[in-house]
Amino acid sequence: MQIHVIQQGESLYGIAQAYNLAPEEIINANELDAPNALVIEQTLVIPIEGRYYFVQSGDTLSILAARYGVSVEQIIQINQLNPNQPLLPGQRLYFPPVPKVEIESNAYIEPINNNLTDALIEEARKHSSSLTYLAPFSYQINRDGTLGELTLGPLPDIAAADGASLMMVITNLEEGAFSGELGQAVLEDEALQDELLRSIIAEANRVGRFSDVHFDFEFLPPTMREPYNQFLRKAVEQLHPQGLLVSTALAPKTSAEQSGQWYEAHDYRAHGEIVDFVVLMTYEWGYSGGPPLAVSPIGPVTDVVEYALSEMPSEKIMLGQNLYGYDWTLPFEPGGDYARAVSPQQAITLARENNAAIQYDEEAQAPFFFYIDESGATHEVWFEDARSINAKFSLIRTYQLRGISYWKLGLAFPQNWLLLNDQFTIRKRA
Image (cartoon, rainbow, N blue to C red; front, top):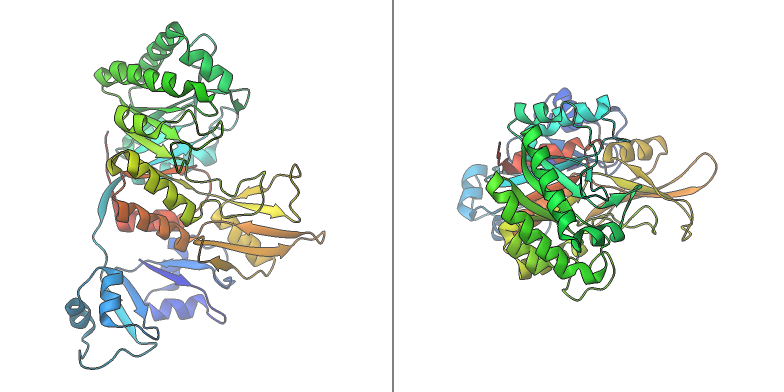
């Protein structure tokens, strides 16, 4: 697959001609709703085998060979080059596809008010073939240790049809927010834990499609660090004999001593030893209640991954990835209006409708733009595109991580799925 960045004056027809494709092939792959109104710096994924590269000043065969993981001899042979002649700026070279790597993938799916809409069901059908796990979010713990009801609808059958399995997500959500007090009540009471584990096993047996039980306990008091570890040991002892894996969601830490209620009770080293795998929640640096920032800037994400690797093996780490961005109204004021979540497709539409040129932050590896709305207010939008998701995929390959976990289905980002399936083979556990 080729990532193409739209430049001034380019048209879809001209781009298609350059890659020897029909325009409809690019339109369908990228799900373009306005193919004749492309935005400057918008990215397109070109559905070809391998990729083309246009030589830049200073490029050499050895530099390009190292960058694309091929030998100098392969570049010469494939492109029928004269090794005694220097490369010329603008010269087009072809590079073959990189070998696929096998990984696991997960996507959370969140029923709205415990209702699975037709749109969410269609998203599950559309992408379950690209998933190891489909994770309905979430089973909430009741005060008596039982599980609250969760509407699954056709999700078990959808997963089964594509060889995916379900992930049973267990949370300490209460009245719409994570409750540290509820989490503490469970972690300090053996009887509540026993009832919770009995309820989990009963529900897993009833549904018959779960292969993993995923504990997402957030905002626990710092004193719950060791009780949480002990509970996970008990969970593994009881769930493994049922044929169930156990995983956890971890706040994005960069050290064992990181302070703050979101972080302190999450013990990376212990989780790495106890559970089968973890999901790093490597997003929300830019969040709805904060100032405009990239949601998952590559530098901070890498820092979290590198810390995790110092505490656990790479094959236990799933990289968390957002399928959304945010639209902030400026000026940002703490405690003011929350930013609006937008899908990558919606962000492109906003840029097009407001005649905004997209920019790309090379340090954060994330696209953004500004626009002025009908009332005269200035907006700042950060989102994801093919370049930013490719940077995360490179991180997975470089550090040989277990895979990727998406929050969440229902936000259109076709380029993610194109590149995911181009670069990786998705392991199935069903």
